[in-house]
Amino acid sequence: MKIDYKDLGTRIKKKREGKKMSQAELASRTDLSTQHISNVENARSKIGLEKLVRIADALDCSVDELLCGSMKTGSRSVYSDEIAGILEDFSNTEMKVLPELLKYYNYVFKLLKDDLEENE
Image (cartoon, rainbow, N blue to C red; front, side, top):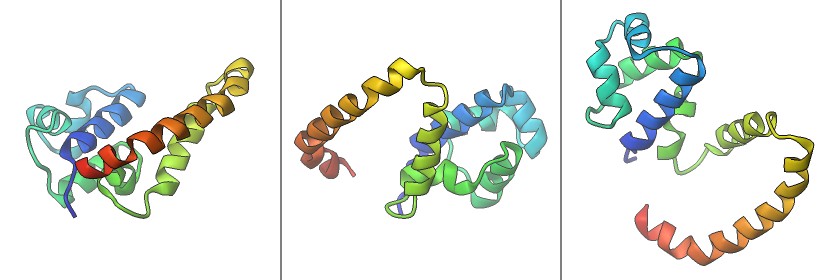
């Protein structure tokens, strides 16, 4: 399995910011340096499993949630949970529009599918 470190870093940053936690606070909670957290979030450094587990624990999430962009299978439930969290903030009007938007998305995705698969 090839790890998508850019996606991993983006997910760590998003989780950290969602918890209103600074890089320094995350570093302190994981016994890592602030610079290392920054490097991981910006995909300038790779991270080992032990450190990734410490980060997931500090962010109160699973390693799967952080790695799902690198997983070929088994990440559907992670994405479903992520989508459910986004939908919680939608207004009634946004919810009414969403089915049509998803139909268009499905159409566009089918058109772009070959390009996406080539880049994996």
